[in-house]
Amino acid sequence: MQIQFHGAAGGVTGSRHLLVVGGKRILLDCGLFQGRRKESIKLNHQFGFEPASVDAVVLSHAHIDHSGALPNLVRHGYEGPIHATFATADLLTYMLRDSAHIQESDVRYLNRRLRKKGKPEVEPLYTMEDAEDTLAQVEGHRYYHPIPILPGIEVTFYDAGHILGSAVVQVDITEGNEKRTLVFSGDLGRRNVPILRDPETPPHADVFLIESTYGDRVHLPIEEVDDKLAEIINRVFKRRGKLVIPAFSVGRTQEIVYAIARLMRSGTIPACCVYEDSPLAVNVTDVFARHPETYDREIRKILRDTGDPFGFELIDYVRSVEESKALNLKKGPFIVLSASGMMEAGRILHHAKNSIENPRNCLLFVGYQAAHTLGRRILEGADEVRIFGEEHPVRAEVEKMNEFSAHADRNELLAWVRGFKQPPKRAFVVHGEPDQSRPLAERLRREAGIQTVHVPSIHEEESI
Image (cartoon, rainbow, N blue to C red):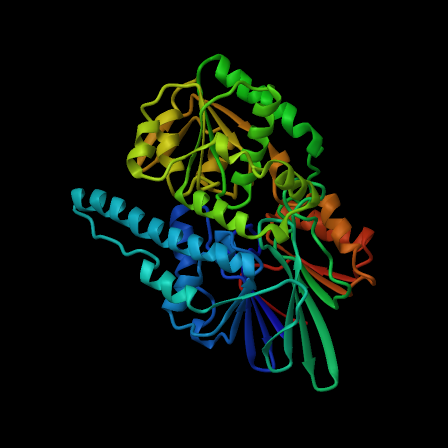
């Protein structure tokens, strides 16, 4: 049995791990790379394996860096099933179509510029038709129910507490008289946060793959979220600025809306205009409403008491392009949330372009910014950034709140590992930059009793 690491190895995005068992090939996740534009384009056109040779795909969750390359996989010959939880399958219906729309619209915008310069045009990575073909191959499953995906191979989903439908993937493999268990953490959420249940650890693993996005960091307590968010909002509103929040449409947006609604209802911040400018987020909100089985006790109680746990009646949802453009002409104070969370695509780029040069405004980062993304460059203090091919000086205030992170920190990751009944013998640390993955690997050896821990490189293959 071998495992090949074709993404999220030595970095955070592009999760793709290929498990080879007795000639059968199971792909764990199939995500897009995000970061340096030219490098990401190259990586997203290469799989490191032949798509048609894959026998089954298993998804941990619907975030684009874990699912967004599926239409390209199908475009290049994959015809098998795509296994996911029911909630993830629902989310993919919107997310893959949205991703295809972004691929096509960004290429149209780029080609207009290329034509003016007399340069050759480019094609999208995949199209809406590819996304529709992909959705036809998705199969939804419930948590805790073993799924026979290939002869001798079963998959069971446990709750990862990261986003709606996110799963820890347990793969049980029987070869002759030998049975082995591999566990893939996917992305693990934080404990004791609103909306979703806490991440779960399967009872047993011989070997496991664990994410390390925040493998060497400790988040501030959840309890400090309201105070810090209120202070930022009130400061920006006092100078009549715009608060622009790049936010992933799944999970992060709903959590921030929930927090803003809490602050408004308590009178901690003034009643204000809040715009959710992401058609995908609007659709995702509908998916949240359809899956109350994923909620924690707090949200279920508020749902019973008020019928509106997320404060959706306080938010203006922007659907049309015309409504989105109108926000760029609107004077502050107001709040706008828009995707993508790393500012690599989508309507957030237009909001950034039209607000980043005004010192009254504020860009508030509430999620992880991968290396070389536009969000990372701004967060690291760039004086100027390029948006749609034009340079813009960064004069707006820049803030961050890791408290909203949907990723477990180093203590929560270790707690998850300690949840196994017996320490697994072997671990692979993935989905993290080296300064986060290597310290976590050392802690797994020293503090969690894991005998063999390895931090793989891209396209590396290991026998297990």
